Amino acid sequence: METVSEVRTENAPASASTEGTQVKPIATVVWNSLISIKFAIWIIILLAVTSILGTVIEQNQSPEKYHQVYEEWAYNLMDRINLFDMYHSWWFLLLLCLFTLNLACCTIDRLPRVIRTVRKPKTVLDGAMEKSLPLTERWKSKGDIALRTDEYKAALAREFAAPKVTDADGAVHLYAEKGVASRFGAYATHAGIIIVFLGAILGNVFGYKSYVNIPEGKEASHLDARGGKQHINLPFAVRNNRFWMETYPSGQPKKYASDLSVMENGREVLRKTITVNDPLVYKGVWFYQSSYGQEGGATAQVAVRRHDGTSLGTLSLAPNEPVKIDGYGVVRGVDYNQDFQGNGPALQVVIEKPGQAASSLWILQGRPDQDRARKDSMVFSFGGLTSKMYTGLQVAKDPGVNLVWLGCLLLTAGMMISFFVSHRRVWIRLAEGPQGKVEVTAAGSANRNRPAFEKTFASLLVEIRKDPSRKEKENPA
Image (cartoon, rainbow, N blue to C red):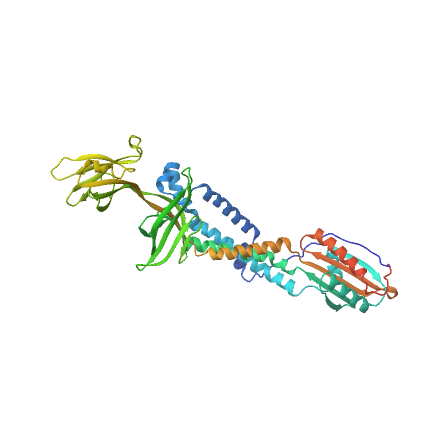
């Protein structure tokens, strides 16, 4: 029979840390400041407050727009301290650098101790450790230590983890552990945050974000960023070959896209049709479909034929802009009516022939032979209005984006380890007891989720005691 003597769940106080050397007091003071939790909290508060300001205050707008919102003195003050472009300001970058430095120093200061704890765990359950552990249980058993050691070792390996066996102070100590990785979860999180901040700093210093409108058939290689304060010349040009839009029956935009070409040294090196969320990427510069609009006024398309039906081509008539037809005269479009006298779209043109008074007529879009009735040498037919569109592109370059992604992955992994993995340890000490019995002491601890480990520890001891390999029955103390 066996006797359960006690189960404690109280935490023992943590041992005090040792003080650093005083050989370089100034360096020590600086180092202690950098690894201070208070220092980190203050930086986090400042980053939070300034980020709120950067969200409330629109960034990188034109001065005219800011003057509409703020008084002159407020505008001057906010502009002086870079509140209109605060994410690129020196003081915001300084906060990011200080927080990164704080996390790096804290990691450097604490990580070696964790590595030592993991590499050289305390495998001997002495009296001091027994008092410091939250879970302990004792019983006495018949038999010899060697037999019980083999039994408990096998049971631990089967039910928990393969134990290390240590002989010390006339007793045998078994030590088993699981979830060692949880000791490094916080440091993986720290490393992830540091990498994310380094990526953000890199992107802030060497990256940019801008917008550009490119009319159809035109190209662009120059950008204005940060409210027009930064001028960027791309090492290549982007040409808008075509922009088009699909609409719902109600007229609302359904889809719009741009056919873009990347021109480098006068030749096309890349061509792609972009849509919303499907950007063009070239040499680390991303071109997103952002907006669109009409470039200039619409032009009227007027087909010209001789009276015998011979086609002479099509005129593109801009509003009131004269177009000369050799040997005939000058034609200009002066008005447009969407529904002329109930006959649909129509264009009013003025014809000026040498030596004759100018004449005016309306030509209907739906009646291409209408002008034949005029019995002129030229017949005009209205083909409708066309207009050139421009595509609005958001242009972004962020050389730190891959670092940010890497940091996010590491940050996520570190948080998963920190929240869901626990370092669980179990010790069993077997010592000679009175009357030929073996005194057994079991102890356990977990660095998180201790209520769950209490159940695991109790179940583990039950499994150890009913080990079928044992031939002898344990007696209560």
